[in-house]
Image (cartoon, rainbow, N blue to C red; front, top):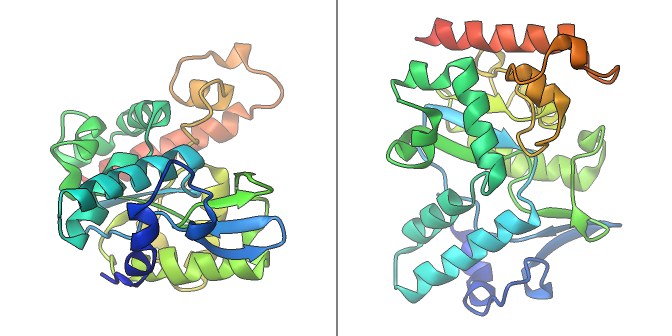
Length: 253
């Protein structure tokens, strides 16, 4: 594990006062897109499943920075500081609860031999690598970055995907990768074509858990009937994604 970024920004973490967009944490900028440092580079070498979000949002960055600061005050070694920060912030908040429901719905916990996918964020965290297509927080005009339609077309974003998530993926050839949300899937698919991941280890189609009011997610989970869907949700597409993921998890068992 490379501690280069952590060592560079450690003084900023020790002095952190609650603003993930502090000038002392800025890494790169391209127009309205700005990348900031937060301690998300920890990699779990024993992980069997890799959950991939789009990028840490402001709330997650704040959790990671606060936890890292606390761990530094306790005098913990750098690997443990990074591990604690990563686990504390991974899909934190209500999104985590929704994600657990989605993962249980496709049977991920059964493949892993767990009571629930909730255990991945607790006693079974040795099986999980929670990460993002863009490892470090990116903000667009000061707001949480949602990925855009074609992030691979932006030179800075392309470099972020390749240099961090892409290189990490290469070190985990036996893990299963599950992109969370359609935008993340597009980026992971691009990296797969670039040779950073094996197509057979990537399972697309899981909705984004952060959209709690999304009827797409509600229908995926069986919480909403097909007849009640609006014209904005393609029920056949959701059914196909759900069936594919369930069959894929069952085939792994």
